[in-house]
Length: 234
Ligand SMILES: Nc1ncnc2c1ncn2[C@@H]1O[C@H](COP(=O)(O)OP(=O)(O)O)[C@@H](O)[C@H]1O
Ligand SMILES: [Mg+2]
Image 1 (cartoon, helix red, strand yellow):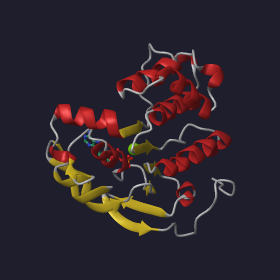
Image 2 (cartoon, helix red, strand yellow):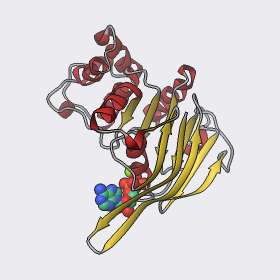
Image 3 (cartoon, helix red, strand yellow):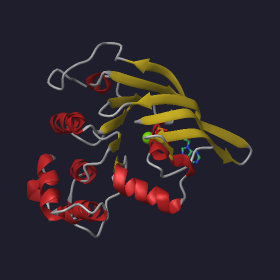
Image 4 (cartoon, helix red, strand yellow):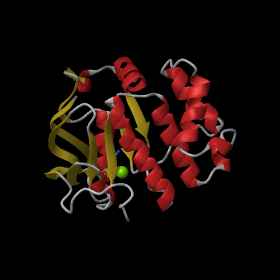
């Protein structure tokens, strides 16, 4: 499970201190899917980067299964990310000189997955890209690149998936497919943190954590009720 204790992240910009996160605390249980909802600039990406050990907070603790990851050194951060985290970046971060398949397989190999090639092909199939596996990122549309990034996060079968606006570039139909795929990860006891600024998309989970100016303003079921993926409209 994940425990965040009074997390602060401040950026010093000359004279000005930007409080990107200002005392954020919450717990997430195994197998829970949580939506992190907030407008642009509210601190969502900053928070994911901290949970994913890409960065350290200014103050507070982040415990994963009881271990405070904010105290990890670089090597420990790397091992933690490699073994535990499936990250879907808002800007995809694909390797431009690797094909779709190679992008996915690279991550599978790094996480020491057996049959990494077969698993990577299956992950690309799951996101509907079976006929694009040898394309390079520049030969793919934004939505297709996004799906490669999603396949790359899924192939690891990670304990924790951090998805930063994963449907941002996707058309409606593909977006729903991807959300369905992310919800399915509950079956493997995976924790999914799904970041969105879209209040309708937030309704697919039992729990929505709302962030405004780096502070939590709500933590509970979606206000307008939960909807199935089939009913979802945005
Ligand atoms: N590396 C950085 N240096 C300075 N300010 C930053 C940095 N990253 C984010 N911020 C600021 O922190 C706030 C939260 O940003 P971010 O976490 O990216 O928000 P969101 O993902 O919700 O749009 C914003 O005001 C942003 O300008
Ligand atoms: Mg963001």
